Amino acid sequence: MRKSLKQVMAEYGPVALTVYLVLFAGVLAGSWAAIRLGWSPSGAAGSAGTFAAAYVFTKLTQPLRIAATLALTPIVAKVHARLTSQRTEVK
Image (cartoon, rainbow, N blue to C red; front, side):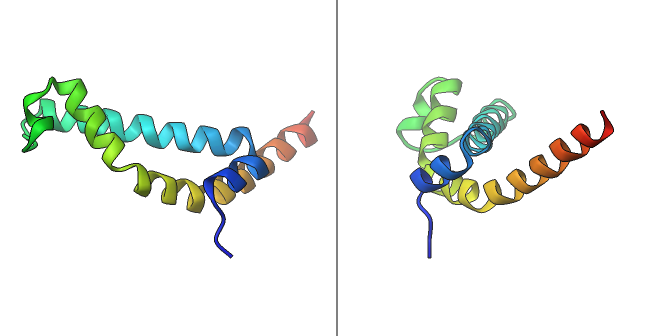
């Protein structure tokens, strides 16, 4: 059964939100850096400012970021739970 982003957010809460926001920030920063380093997008986004073009590219990649969030959140949640339980055992 395929889970939706809403279901994953409800099940994993802050971990899912953090994964999504980290992916968003990473794509936005990577897009901005790529444009600043010389990659020139074509079309309407190419004539906008660097940040605006990076934001448009980031919005275009939203389906991929959602898919990555759905795939990575359970893994990150397991690692987070393991690290949290180890930290409480040490105390």
